[in-house]
Length: 368
Image 1 (cartoon, rainbow, N blue to C red):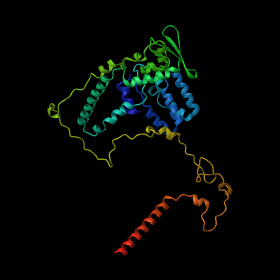
Image 2: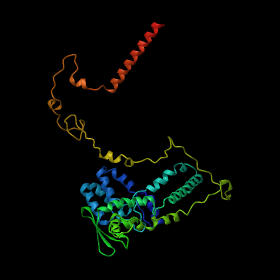
Image 3: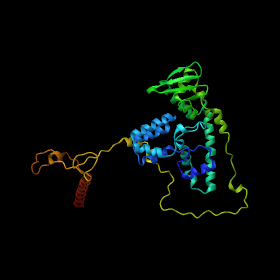
Image 4: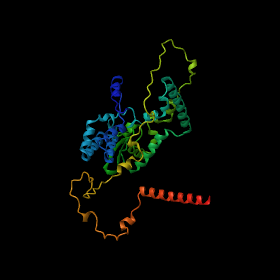
């Protein structure tokens, strides 16, 4: 999975021509929102990427076209959906990830190591991985249930959604799941398949399959793919990194010793942390829902200001209701209710402070 770098596209096509290459949908959405912002378009793009069948993919595309034709044209001209849509992913990998969070998380842990020379950087990364493998293995030894904790959490969420599906059994291995809004899927427990394709894509039973498993009185946690079981986890983490000696005890090389390249100090403070996009903020969805309505003070219209207004100005009677002029020397009713500005408050505070200082100085002079 990459961020649509052109160099990686060419390299993977040459080195691994038969491998599956995915694009991070989060980075794809950043390019999409530059020309097509808005919460409605964001939800529709992510809905398209999350569809697990070709029929649902086409239906989601038609919904986007009815909502915004220009956004639909952008998606059609974009990368092939096999790179970013679940409906076109390979079922062999049993992974339905759409974002590149694994690489981003690893990159965040090696920020200090990246600034070091190549050998020191590799040593820092090796020590970090060596300790991480030990911690992951120790944490899994304390967890006695089968399956990883995060995978079991996904299954628990799907178990809650399974209650809304009505199951019909064909007295063999086939089950029909009928749910809300006329949705209907077929489940085959012998083949571990559902026509929604989510079970085959992720290796985790979908809510339709879990409803069928409950009807068959089977445990959905035992129907997970082999890669999620406890025994496979320990088999993977048996490949530990071995400790090594310090560089003084390393074998000497007869090759020419290379000098490091001349370093060029860039102006300003170097940036280590990745610059986060606006969409990664926690309050991004709330910000998208906010709508600032501009009112024109010239004509009273909505959607423009007085500088760009082309409408005739409102009459004085429409702009402000008639008021009786206040007697001379008395503030009007509007002025009485107006709050002092910040500049007026600062000036008043200065006058009071200066008066107190003068009074204190005079009293001190009289005393002396």
